[in-house]
Image (cartoon, rainbow, N blue to C red; front, top):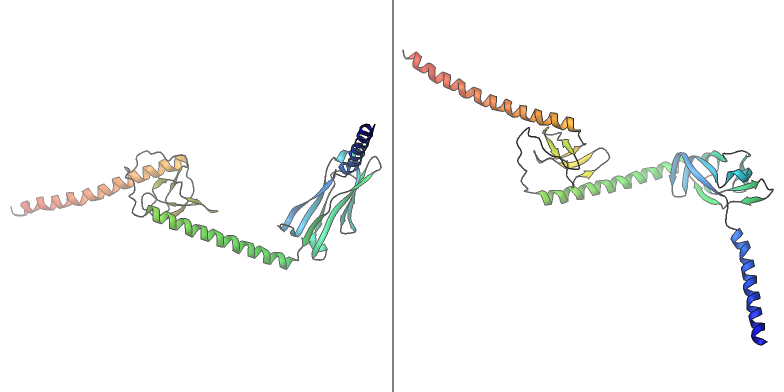
Length: 257
């Protein structure tokens, strides 16, 4: 009897715990709000400018929505999409809570979790933007300096591969480019560094570090042909003075007659 009594008590306790857990599960938020930047500044929870607050969830069961900023109604919407645009400059700078009150078609209502954002003044956001650009610029310059130093050390004294001017060549998976210094084509290297305006790479022909962009196969072929024509022109200019000297030597014998 005692064992049966204890078993009954245990079952009763477990049953009460099971049913008491149901309301806790029902407290999971079915609807939330999302704040999106339309135009302005946003960094973590610091925002300034034009933003939109939108309801996230099944809108088919929603009758209307009140969007709140702190304890004041920001907007009341009774049709989908439940989204409202606002400007932070219409409110005092500082921390603000944004949330929604959702009215369902069955007559019930729900409050969404509050999102906390720090509304910045225009001057403050401008200062933060300048700081961010300075930090990014400093990091970028440091990376460029380090990469350039490493590349220079590893490639110092490295002989450039000889290639017949104008000869067709394979530029590999990374493609080829045209050196803005010497005008000759060369394959892009894996040790090159992609920057915003192009790729910093070392020319196989003149050995200089240049900023380049990937060239199309047609442009590379034209550069190869121009490379060959330049060599032929140099050879012609070399041969012509030699022939002129020979002609002058021949006229010496005619003058003696």
